[in-house]
Length: 358
Image: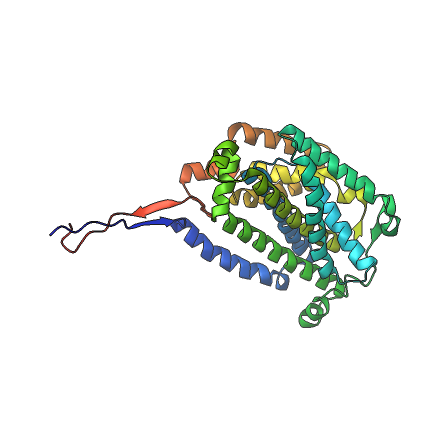
């Protein structure tokens, strides 16, 4: 009697390295949550900076690294989200936490009409178009007299101290209100960073993630297998706008003061973000994590060199692009094969057999 063999294949994405990293990341998250208990206020502010820049970098990497949309106008969403938060707090009297959420929604709404125009452009024209739109938004908000016009404005003195959670943190840990504000902002930044990375990782492992990769590599081929590139780009652009708007609003809750030039700074919110992604490794989740750590270290080492600081950053970026086109993480992964956030499908197993091995 002959028994017909049946396929017994499994598709896996998890690797041994990723399983170990998951445990390490969980432990690091617990330590990070408890950090306000044993680190100084200045270190907490540095951690806040790292986390918010990581969110911005992951958002830009989603656009450029996975959807092929190289934008140099992400400052539009940072500034618009921040101004929406200020409007919610100053004009509507809402809690800054609610203002942060409204900032993300406002940035996503801004992505709808702007996307209609920039998606008509390709390549370098798309990049220039996003920058032009950011400038238009900056100039428009500079005319908003209720929020300070061109000179900007500050949050009301009691707005941040009255933010949700600040009183409880101050009472629980015996902190002054200003220090408690930093703790709450840090915790929100930590939550936002984890949520952003988790969302992007889950997206890349889904069917939509496969379509996104196919669209990035070859739009015509992706369209032939049923992927709608325009729809995918629109969704990614809107999601990136929402995440960037949240980060921008959170950053300016912590800063407590805003002006058009600062909120729409192409250097602070786009050039640095691009640098982080490029040196870390574009098109990977690990790359922005590595990049933001390198950027923070370089910023502290080179901050006293004035204008030479930007020149040195540019030189480092050029050297990385020449000798490690896939970034520092890409160079490391190519040599070791380690992936902490694996998204490639691996086919394992084989055909099943009967009890006699037939």
